[in-house]
Length: 266
Image 1 (cartoon, rainbow, N blue to C red):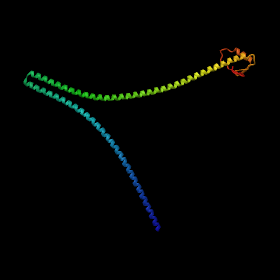
Image 2: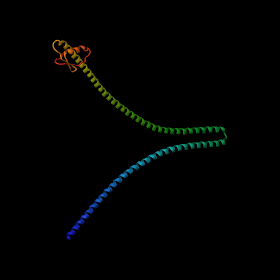
Image 3: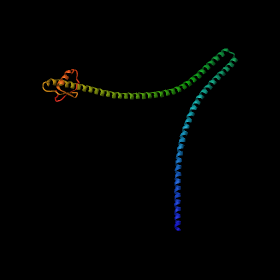
Image 4: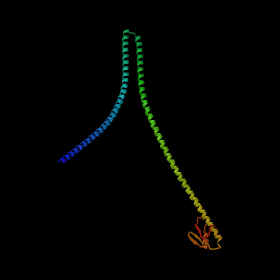
């Protein structure tokens, strides 16, 4: 009975230890998952921050462009308002002068005042025209700067393309030179082989002609001494038939195949 109780206690302790181990493992797994989640969150936050910074930069750029456009429009509006004010001032001056002239009723004064007004108006118009011309020239200069930058970029691209084309041409010429050198070497080899074959043929012809001359001399010297055995084209002939055949040979035949048995070279 005591043993049973002890066994039960031991089993319970082991179960408790297993539960503790499983709990520890679960906690460790949870910790790992939490760490991974934290790292992922930090990465996502960084990406979001970069995106936000890019968006803010784009917004700032857009705002700057809009501000520049607004400033240009404001300048134009101010110019228009100034022109309008000048026109109103001139009209007011004219009205005042007309009133004064009506009061004074002096034609000379009226003429002088009219000339003065005309001069003032001319000066105002010239000033407005000058300002407008300056604005147009500034705009044209900005456009010209952009155009110059574009042209420079195009020129650089064209120069780079030219350099690449020249390099390709040089490579092709070098390849052609290599092919030509190989062809020349092959031609030299062929010419030398042909020359050697000609030389060997000439030597063979000379040796055959010498052989035939030697046979003719042999015929003359050994006609009355003893019987001559001759093989022509692998067939043996006695001296009578050989002399009959030799009498019919033309003198220009150099390549007649002749072999002599039983005699040294003449």
